[in-house]
Amino acid sequence: MDTLQKINGVPVLMCGTEGETIAGEREALDCIANASYQGADWAVIPVERFDEAFFRLSTRVAGEIIQKFVQYRVGVVVLGDISRHTEAGTALRDFVRECNRGRQTWFVADADELRDRLTGAGA
Image (tube, rainbow, N blue to C red; front, side, top):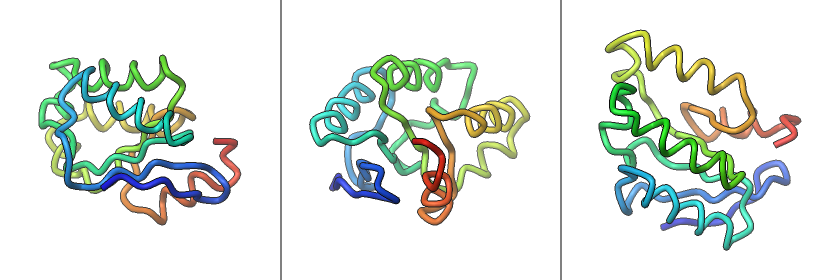
């Protein structure tokens, strides 16, 4: 179940692990609409909710999904352990590093790391 929370004063939609698999633009737009409706600046989506294709950059799924969040000005956080995906090659590892340098898309291991990122991040 998705719930609205405030983390360090920032409204965040915490998406539950159960729910629709985010496999493309349609599911991303559903999540964006829910976040916007609830007044969230960020959507935090557990890694389990993403289709496996999201983690293979050659499919372009990750780019399409993230672009929708950028377009609608809702930050997106991929929450959880993605090490099995990043160990498979350098492309995803580099992509994650670049995303985490920015202020729109983050890959974080757990809620503590998210809280740290939202502290003073101007999110």
